[in-house]
Image 1 (cartoon, rainbow, N blue to C red):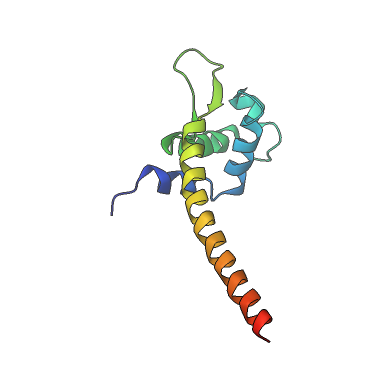
Image 2: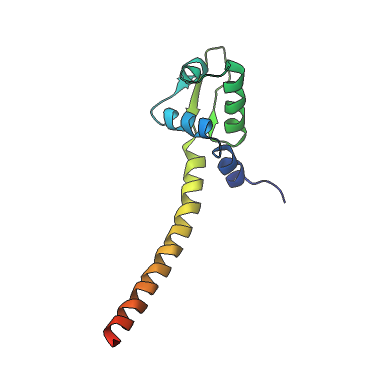
Length: 109
């Protein structure tokens, strides 16, 4: 089965460091050095995390000379949000039906 964009994005965000990087980028663009500051890991390790996020389409770095800012790609997050929201609505509808059944059974008692 080919890996689709949604699967790559969820897989990339399975790692807590990458989720933290995304959370930090939600406040604005940052250089790799700025992103690396709070982590007890090499700059090379941070680049590996960024590469995974880039390949998943979650972040991007424009071409050009260093230092380049890393930016969050909201489109991939919108795709994930849409998928989650679809199943959240289904679950809420099931719970509403269950609430109705329970309310009916309480009325009959």
